Length: 70
Image (cartoon, rainbow, N blue to C red; front, top):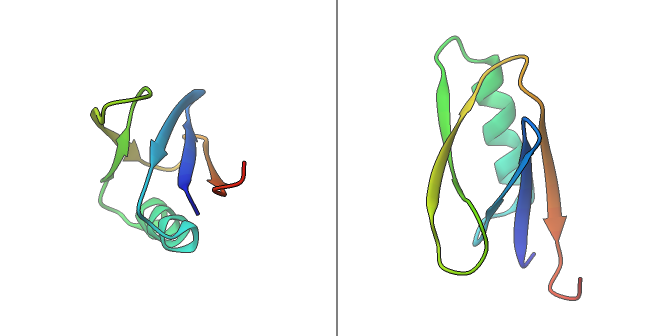
């Protein structure tokens, strides 16, 4: 996987250097938890610019694995 795109509340973010299944599991566990959890992502393109998104029930999250060939 080259990177993982995250669509969160209609905005696109990305994560690199992580396994897509591990990210999905982290999101699932966070949403099921009684404690709000932050997920570190990148916003924009080019130079890394950190953003933290709050994972809570009711907020739409999509996980899209992007292969090196895409």
